[in-house]
View 1 (cartoon, rainbow, N blue to C red):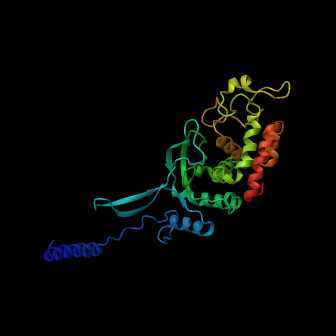
View 2: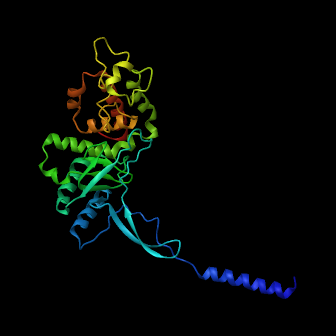
View 3: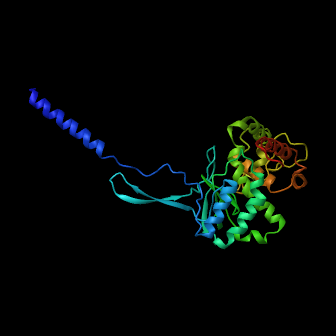
Length: 306
């Protein structure tokens, strides 16, 4: 190759490099932290949520679309990105049975926000230690779930709380169950953390030891007597007798289909009642009280004062 051709090629290469350096695209902040509430003095609802966020560190929303951002797609075309809270159920273990899901969400009238914020601030937040993270809370008028009723549901990056407009008129018993459901949703992942694996195995094995030929989880309840062994003479083989509080939330004909559902039911009951109330309801079931104590050990380690 002669020297003139080499010089032409070198010039072209340098020109291309120079052009590529000049054509620098400044991309939007795609890694933006959306789970914050920013101040807006012109909007009383936003300001109330902002004040709550400043005091507690918990972002509160009344719509699952929490922000927008102008972006450029791979073809160079501008579009608007809508950041939406994920209501998909998220746990550290895979789902067994029909995956927990939430449907029929009805958004909250913002006039009901002050009462909800006051309730969370006085009844819920004080019970949540710094060791337990609340990514966000979505307050709605109503929703339906196939696993956990219509009070509270744990999504991927939010805790969905329904029936908000009824808080002011709830009686004490209803409000206790409501608070229990909310705290169950907040604490589920923290309790199921790898740190507590040994304690949780003891919790699961309380029920499993009564079913030697198969797993105690996901049994068709009418068939329990076929599989259960080791109960005292005269004791009927029921879910409660082998340590379950009740049936799976997704199918009332089966024992809890998964270990995390079992844990969730205990969290719901423990947070939704006093120790005295729990003992009055379940104290005659030795297996239930043993499992209660294992969950209590974990909650105490997390910093919860029961």
